[in-house]
Image (cartoon, rainbow, N blue to C red; front, side, top):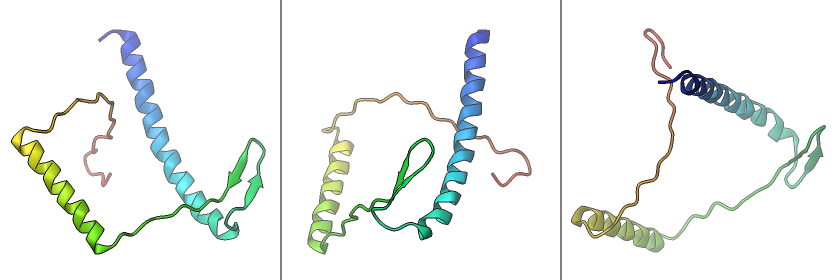
Length: 104
């Protein structure tokens, strides 16, 4: 492995760890902020706007859920019988390795 690739991998690793830590901190702040802001309210900040929005989360009838389950079963059957086709998608994944004696 050349030095440039090694440095890029280490930088990527550092950023992924920072990303995970930032997500935790962002979620903590959201929990503190949300109770104090109304729906559809916009708050101007120094560099942008924080807007509280709402989206629908649909719950369907048992009949529709049954159709969905039948479709899932049909898809699994087509995969098992070799009828369905697959196109691989390349992606990168990063996971922290467990350190000895750690609960992470």
